[in-house]
Amino acid sequence: MNDTAHALGAAPTLWELAARRAERTPDRPVLLQDDRSLTFGGLRDRAERVAAGLYGMGVRPGTVVAWQLPTRIETVLLSFALARLGAVQSPVIPYYRDHEVGFALRESGADFFAVPGVWRGFDHTAMARRLGAKGVFEAYERLPEGDPAVLPPPPSDGTAVRWIYWTSGTTSDPKGVLHTDRSLIAGGSCLAHALRLTADDVGSIAFPYAHIGGPDYTVMLLLYGFPAVLVEHFALPESLAAYRRHGVTVAGGSTAFYSMFLAEQRKRPGEPVLPTLRLLAGGGAPKPPELYHAVVREMGCALSHGYGMTEVPMITMGSPDDTPENLATTEGRPPEGMEIRIVDGEVRLRGEAVCRGYLDPAQTAAAFDAEGFLITGDVGHLTASGHLVLTGRIKDIIIRKGENISAKEIEDLLHRHPGVADAAVIGLPDPERGERVCAVVEQRPGSEELTLATVTRHLRAAGLSVHKLPEQLEVVGGLPRNEALRKVLKYKLRERFGG
Image 1 (cartoon, rainbow, N blue to C red):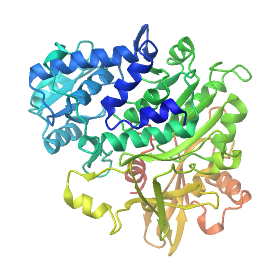
Image 2: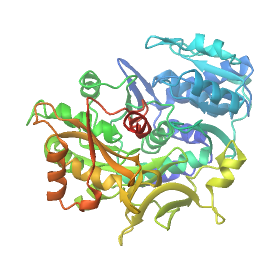
Image 3: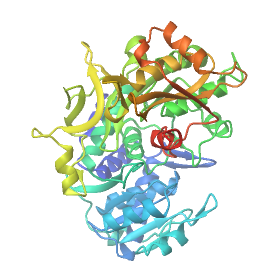
Image 4: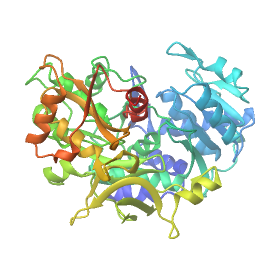
């Protein structure tokens, strides 16, 4: 990390980090969206005015403010205004509806709730009223503003809990994850250091800013002083115009984003879909090695993948100076200060970027072991070079006739099949075997029809043990995914095909 970034990284709070960057490079852009831009100095100054407006509404240090807003300049401004006040923020993914939003509002005890009004055909204000939310206000194009002279001093304690993030809650109610400014800064610092970015880069935030990746990425912008293009709704090829217009050099978000860029590139072989792009980076979901090799080969750019979760925004990250083998087959290495311990094959974590626990004390007690390590539920191992290899989730281990089978191992081999665009492997209840292996695949357009026999031949030729071969194949038009980082929702596949 360069000296400037290191000095900025010593800031105890997120607001101080933003203020220091504004002092150093006030006129450099930080946020780019459509024909609008905001400088680092503008971020500081406008956020203070918005903080004053919020203060006039009754927001004080410690006030819980929930916000469900899309990826816009105004969203970032509101978040930094709340950071300036020392309020407790509860970001909610904008695609969530009554059940998840109502749960988040009740559990957090939010005193205010910022919504975008009608967004993408859905009336968020009406939902907020329906749920009985307190302090509802719209914050899409306009934000409350006031005179910063009324503001109290900015917060100085970076270890106080000021963030409540929400796990996806795909099979049960979400968990409220407690973060501090320091834990978010630690996560963003890991990302910045691993990717080796410079002030000349142009990044992109194409995922919901309300995701834990929002502050993760923003910390990186503040540390290195470069801008990012904000994409309110990511879709290809529609979003390419903004990337080209601003000369994006670093793109990505998650494995699904890599696949989407690659699919777009394959429409124009030999012609770079993004001429300025030099790096795809992200995390959030396992990355098949074949996808890494295809991106490097066909898109002509590097790919660095990492490992993070709502509870720990950045755990490990691949670095451009890693070997191709490590970039393809591992999740990268942890930064200094992140301890990884493997207990009975399960990954456990301890370090500054780890959350402080959950809103529910019982969930906190169950999530940490006696030595303070977070129990992740992920299965993996460390290589001799310190790189982390993930082999799946404990719940994704399929137990067939008493034998443990890794779904990820089969998925990685399926991705090598020329007719497979994407794949998910699940275990389904079986009266004879305990569980049977079911492969659910998306077929690549124009390829030969996929059958269980052809898939089995491919897997056997790739060296997969006979007892791991799928007994069931389902070909679908598209795998079900969440709206944040487009993770595959395996519980929906189990519900659909488990009957």
